[in-house]
Length: 193
Image: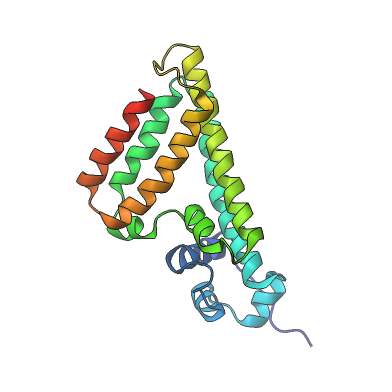
């Protein structure tokens, strides 16, 4: 005999799980942590996520990829993509302390999964490489239309912005102070002015 039917909002469940992973990391997140926040039993969990915790984690980081893809779509339509990139980085300084202390789930995953789970590490690396490509394309466009003065190879500047992204997500944990962060961000953004 079957149990009661499972009904849940897939997006909401993934968001809740993502927040736990983002705060605790993949390894430190227990199945109980996930079941509690998702408000489901283990039977329902494994019925929905046949690959268990790893499948759920993959779906959680896929949501971040989708957010970056949405941002890329905005950049592609923008008349001033460099300003949008700058605003993207500046928005970090507006976050609350808890958000600062969490950093970036994708960068966190690369660090945590190195030497532990190559598949998850590679997925996170691929996402950041996609973001790097997004930055590179926007820079190339701005250089071509003359709205960006720095003529350094766009690929190098794209890598610079990813380095900045990874660095600021550690620095915000050291200094979860919006004023300090904004000054650091503005200084780093000078290179793409």
